[in-house]
Picture 1 (tube, rainbow, N blue to C red):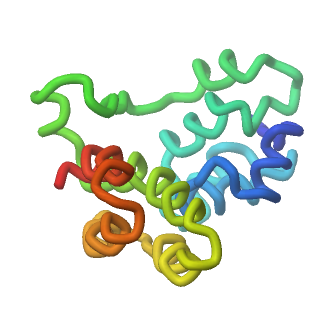
Picture 2 (cartoon, rainbow, N blue to C red):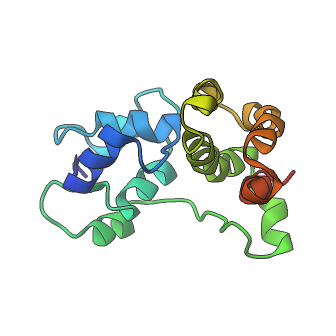
Length: 159
């Protein structure tokens, strides 16, 4: 299936408002209306079909042949993903990659909201490529934004 960027996707790419993970951002950039989902997943960037599905469900990508975004996501084979905060058994099954994917947008939003005083911390978050990197940055984020604001990040990281 060939996917293209939607208008909302183009805007999100410019202003980084959705806090995409680095892999999702790379995948999003690769979708140019010429590459198929299989091409992007197989590009060697570590992009999974789950990443692509999340971009489609978020309305950032749509099928090039005009199919609705949700129908395109339903056609693409994907692995079931655990929902954040559903129950204790589900939380235990979340992989570090799933925790990273849940926590990265939260960490980006929190540090971006600090303005210039959080610029360096925001750069560190954007450079984080693994779950362990975000766990290491969590105390700095917590100190910068406070425990109440960082509670959502702590839940996503399970720390």
